[in-house]
Length: 179
Image (cartoon, rainbow, N blue to C red):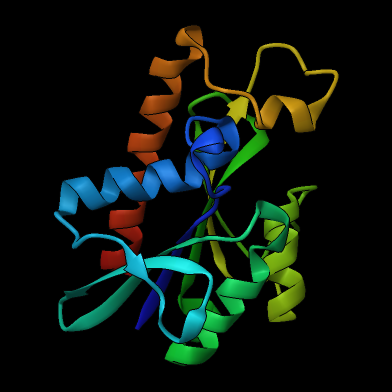
C-alpha cells in the first residue's frame, strides 16, 4: 500500500495560493486518472482522501485538513491507520528554493525550511520518505517569504506554475508505477 500526500492549507481563501501547490498537483492527477471524489478520512483523521487500486496495490491520496504547519499529524495518523511504511509515502509540496514551474524528486532530505515537511518529519520521527518539490520561486527573492507563499498566483506566473503542477502529476504517476 502507498500513501500520497498533497500539502496545502484548507479553506477557499487559500485555494489558489502558492502554498497549495501540493493540493493542486493531487487534483490534476485525480482528474487525469479519474479518481473517486474526495471524502473524509476514517477515524476522524483530519484529511480528505481518495483511493484506487493500481496493479493490485491500494494507493491512498490525501489532502490534510490541518494548516500547513501541522501537516504531520494527519500524515502520521493515516500511516498508522493503514500501516503504511515511511518508504511508501510520497509528499508533494511547494518549494521557494526551486525556480517557478520546475520540480525535483527527492528522498531522505532535510525540510529546507518548509514547515509542513518539517511537521511530517517531526511526527514520523524520520525524513526517509519521497518528495516531489514544485518550484514557486519568483525571479527575485521576496522580502517576506510567508506572505509570498500565502499569496495568490498571478497571471504572469500562472501558466509556468501550471506546467510544474502537470510535471508533478506526471512524476507522481511514474513513482507509483516504478516504486
